[in-house]
Amino acid sequence: MIKPAVLGGRPMFEEEMHITRPTLPRLDIDLFKHLDRMFSMGAITNGQYVRELEEKVADYLGVRHAIAVSCCTSGLMLVIKALGLFGEVILPSFTFSATAHALMWNSITPVFVDCDPEGYNLNPDLIEASITDRTSGIMAVYTFGNPPRIKALEEIAARNNLKLIFDAAHGFGSEYQAKRPGSFGHAEVFSMSPTKLLVAGEGGIVTTNDDELARKIQIGRNYGNPGDYDCEFAGLNARMEEFNAYLALASLPNLEGFVQRRNDLVASYKKELADMPGLSFQRIDPADRNSYKDFSILIEPLTFGLNRNQLAQALKAEKIDTKKYFYPPVHRQKAYAFLYAGYEESLPVTGYVTENILCLPLYSHMEEKEVLKICSAIKRIYDFREDIARIGDENA
Image (cartoon, rainbow, N blue to C red; front, side, top):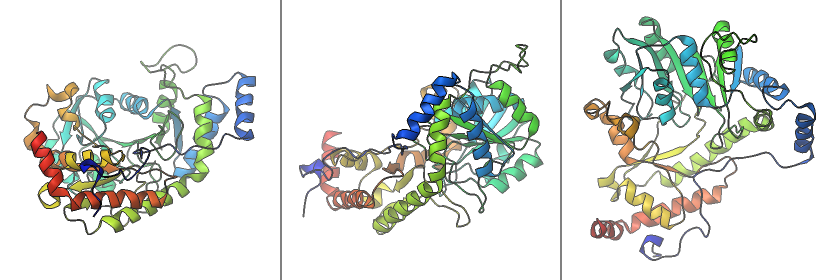
């Protein structure tokens, strides 16, 4: 039996297997033609390509308005400002920090509610217990691309007269009940950063069916200036550059293929790891589609024989990059911990998931043979789990 690399065996990969890689269009004559056009026209921000991207994304998502912004975070900040949110907003702590940062930049207090133990999204069943007379909104997340329970969230928001925003950073390629995101709640905000399926380099898209909200986002991304320099409110410089828009446009026709490819690779992961004791996968509602911006496994240490950190370290020795998304959860991060001491008791699922979850490599042009090698590495590590655990104990 071949030993894993952490015990002196040969690494499974000769070069590092990255957690993700952007899938980009080829450097061909068309790209240079478009670059030449941008340069010759002198319009390098919020121009023709931005408008075209907005039109095509709105059409793809089936929504009235798609507004391009500099990034998902600036989009969230502008939506919060434009909706006039105040006081407190409910959100998960099991999310990327930008979800909460957008609230803090608007002087709004994040109120963290626990996540679902199987799907990892904000748990609607726990929300109403946290609503107070200071609550103005709910912000839900497509965790790893998994759609949240949107109907339940919309019903809670309507019943309590709250604004509902979706941090859909991972949402391009997802579907809820066979419907693409974009028109749920009051607004949804997507990311097109290098780790996403649809890549603009850096960039975001705000979608809504609300005409007035769209107008405010459009001027908000330009400092709140409607065109006469008499700013309606304190906006941001959140304009998208033309090159970023073109990059996204070049990738948009391939988005459905990217989603299918990722789902096929995840199916291979699940097939290979299905019989591994102590490993489980994020639950996806059969009526939904996950974009699989990330693929995660949840490790139950006593059953698997190693904890999440030990497995991550052993995979690192195999030259396999992994990420502990999302660790630490937002409420434990230094920027928030002083505000949320004692929150652990109200977030038991978040605590368990964040301590035991591990994301494995996945990207849209990844090969199945790489998935099989990663799974072989995990099996080999499991076979030597007692020796690996002993090393960990000795080094503790």
